[in-house]
Length: 293
Image (cartoon, rainbow, N blue to C red; front, side, top):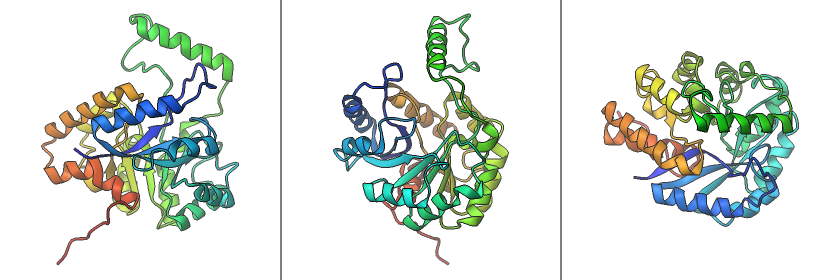
C-alpha cells in the first residue's frame, strides 16, 4: 500500500518546547516508512514545530519523504512573505486559529501568491481539538484522561487564553476563496469537522479545486461512515488521507481506515485514490487524467 499523508504535524514536546526536534523527526520518518507512507506534508513553523529556517534545515534531510508545508498567520504573512517561504523550499501552506474569517480580503495577498506558485493551502476546519476528547472519555472515569486534563490545564496556565473561533474557520469560507482564486488548490481538514459536514459537501460538490482530508479521529471517522460522507456526499476524487495524530498512533489510524474502506466496499481504484493518488495529484506527483469520449 502506497500512502500520501496530507496532514502531519512537526513533532514537538509540548511540555518542553525547546527540546531538539531532530531525533523525533528521525523516529517519525522511520514509522512513516514502516506503515507505507511514501509522501507526507510536514506542517512547520507558527505554533507547530521550530521556526521556518530550522524546520527546513531538518526536512532537507528527508527529501524523498517529507514535503515542507509552512504554517502561516495571514495577519503577518502576505504575498511577498509567501514568496520568501517558497524560495526557502516550502511547497504548501497551512492556516489555523486565524484572527478573522478565512475569506477576509486582507488575506488575499497570501492566497494569490500561493495560487501563482502552485502552493496548495490546507485549512483547519471548525473547532480546534485540545488534548482531551470528551466524546470518548472523561477525567472522572479514566485515569489517563485525568492526567491529560492536568497537562492541558498546566499548558493553558503557561500560554494563557487563546483568540480562537470555529466560526472563522468554516468550510463555507472556502467557497469564497475558491471563486476568487479558481486555480488555488484548497484542502479543508477533518471533512469540515463536526457541525460543518453539509457545508463541506456542498463546497466540494461545486468547486473543482477543493478537497477535504479525512483526519480528525474516531468520532469524525464514525460520522464519515454513518453519514455517507466518503464516496457519497463527497466523491472519492475529492478526499485525501491525513493522519493528524501522534506518530505512535499513525498505524492504528491507517488500520481503522482499512476497516472503513472494507465496510464501504470500495474498489481497488477508489482505495488507491484515497490513499495516494488524490494527494499526489494535488502536489504534482501524479498527473490528473480526464475521461475520454
